[in-house]
Length: 394
Image (cartoon, rainbow, N blue to C red; front, side, top):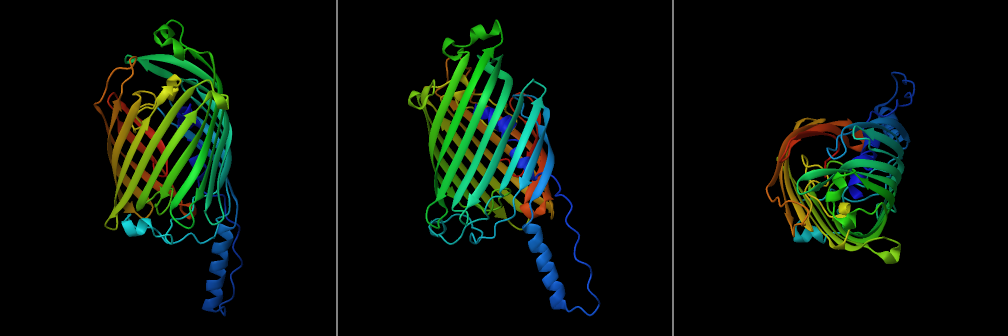
């Protein structure tokens, strides 16, 4: 069910920042010609502080472009909370043995945002929910959560043939992280809850393994996460590294219908090459052990590849991206990636020649919150597709 979140629900949260801010309050009346330069500087500083201390309510259109569920539209009503001014340290450089242990250099805290959202796509998929992301105590605690109801109409591939399914139900996702001392390391836990019904296309559904044809399902899992957060910011990083090692457990003891393990590894690395060019690298690996539902098997996650298209008991993706700062608020970029599946499933065709590539652009639409909006076009093994993007795609 996590692909539902990625495609429909979590897609809405970044858009809470993807629109111009509501009009600022009128500035104070101009002082006379006798005002001193110090007075003028004081007024500017006060106006800048007032902007940071103000809530911003943003009604935002949501453009959904995930190939697995079709193209669609939605609306999000987001609230950016006032910026927190706790000191979180200097921007990190590229990781070195010394910098990894340096507890005094940390990147900017992520924005605090709340919102409600709803969306509908051409496949008949729709979703509605609420979400919130926050950080506390000088960014030593981070929280993110979603509660939503969704109906997903998509395809599950059996021997390279798509079989439609309809999954409908309630989803809850909660994530909490704690910083280790004043370092860049964080430890956390997550909770995922899904209570849904599922129906495969009549006739075609006969090709689906019997263990996946359960009409009513409940999946409940908890995770332990270890994170190294060395990026200079979370919306459009230019330097630093991010590493996350997670271990999910879905278990009948929690009330789940499934028992399986799901370890994951994610590594992101950002390298400035000169004043305008940036080189970004991503590695994602995931695996399962046990008896997951059909959507519980990991799949290759690359731009140009639909969700659930290439699955296996072990999958991975490697992606490289180059960014060029064409103007102070414009970025153009190109990317290429490759994916693999190992320990292939009997009902899925082997495919270890998964290559993707494409190009895109971003505009810094909300400078005060470092929010970027843009478009990517990507070519996968089968076809071209495009994505409306907010911030960095990773």
